[in-house]
Length: 247
Image (cartoon, rainbow, N blue to C red):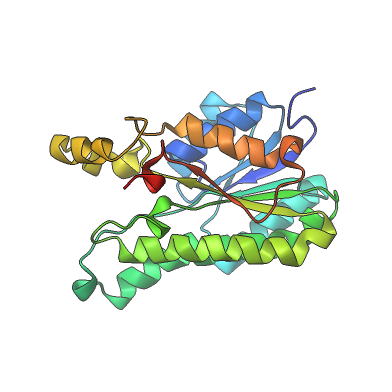
C-alpha cells in the first residue's frame, strides 16, 4: 500500500516550487489532494501536471477564505488526514527601514496563515484519530542572515507554535511537526542563489556542499505526514545539508 493511500491532504501554497513538489510527492504516495494557492494561474498549471487533484484558490491571510476552504473539504470528505501549511512569503529589508506594513504582511502569511489553517481544520483533523499537521519552518530562526528579521521572526514563531499545538492536541491523535529547510533552489531564493559570490559563500559554510532541492523538502514532509512518523510530534526536521550545525 502507498504511504498515504486513502488519506486526504490539504496543501497550502501548492503552486510554488516546494508546494508543487509536495503535491507531486503526495500524489505518488496515493493521497487525495486539495491543493490551495492564492494564484489561480499557478493552480491551473499544477492541475495540468496532476489532473486528479482538487484545486482551491484562497488567500490564507483572509479568515473567510480559510473557513470556506476548510468547509469545502468537510463537505467533500467529512475528515482531513493531513494538513501541510506551506504558504509563505519572503521579505528582505534593513530592520531600521522595515515598515509596519511590511512586517505585518510577512506575519499575516507565514504565521497568521498557519494559525488560521490549523485552527479552522482541527475539527476535521480530529475525525480520523491519527491525523498529521506539517508546518513549514526555516533555519533562519537559528542561523541568521542580514535583512531577514521579519521572515526569521515569523518562522521562529511557527516553530514555537508547532511545539505548543503538538502538546495541546496529542490526545486527539493529531501529530504536529515542522520541516525546517535551509536554502532551497526555488524561485523564492533565485535572486540570492544566482549571485555567484553569495552562492559560493553559502556553499562554503554548508558541510554537504549543496543546497536542498524542492523534492528533498517534499520527501521530508511526506515522512512526517505518513504512518512512518507515528511516534513523532512536536519536532522540527531540519533539511539544510548541515548548514545549521556548521560554524
